[in-house]
Image (cartoon, rainbow, N blue to C red; front, top):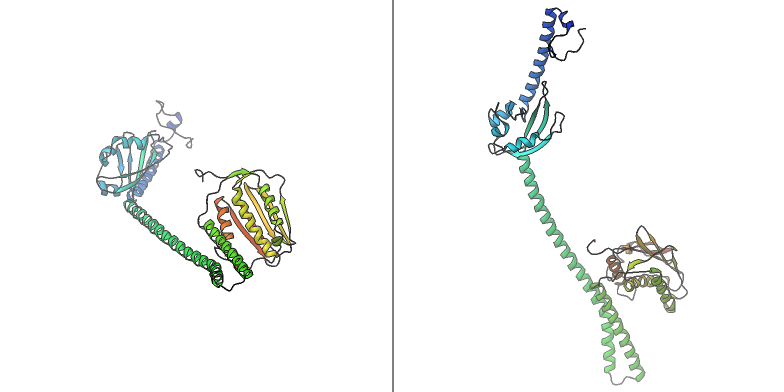
Length: 402
């Protein structure tokens, strides 16, 4: 019967009969051992709290301080018996916030406050602490985070300064890149203009001679006209690259534009030669948003490049389909391909391997596709084929949502 649990001796106004059968010396020994264990456990916990580097105090249900450890007494003095908010110089609402909604099982609260006495900032963890009599006290653990807050503030200032420096550096690099690109464009434009201008000057000098035959004059005039048109074309392409207009996005069927492109290419027998030009579209394609004129310019530019590479023989395929919310168009030729070292440069303005041409066509095409929110990519296997892939969202995004 010794092992039977006892809730409280005399709790119901009488002592259980079996206790009367125990020798009084045994009862005294059990009680003493139990009290010793409780005292030892209490002393051990007190020693742990006393030697913590953080401040520890306990308040009862009336907000009065029941216990303070050594670290807290060193910082604030002895506050035993005083109400928490009065001792720490806080408003009574602070105590209510600590205790509000906290039962004997939690949850713990975490607060941060700055003491007017020590001028330090503390991170305070408040947890429920159940008592043997059924009441609930509050265990408070304070950690001084003043230096941490100073470091965080300094880190924030440093981060903001660093962001400012990075932004200035990025802006400086962008300006340098724009100037470098402007210099490259100016150099390319000057090179392209120099040839037709030289031809114009030569033609004018020939016409100034009085002994020119009529047939020679006609030949010179024809040359002047050709070079003038060439100069006009160069300037038009340059303006299209330098001042691109926003696309006029209209919903439509892309296959109509691609069929027109194929028909236009087939009519130019001098360019197409014996090349077989075909167009393939998926049967389930729906309408998409695009600028009809600008996208047709892109397709013509890519297809003309393919025909020029084929030099009158081979196949040129135009393929369109829709997938993953994107409109896709591929232009494939089985020509000689593009060298690997040129693939990374073909979209740069004025880069070309042709004897004639400004090298602006692909740069303009890339700009148009990007204005549609899309991408243009190229894959090439030298000696086998080259594929240009154009893609953009089927539904154009509005400026507000972009």
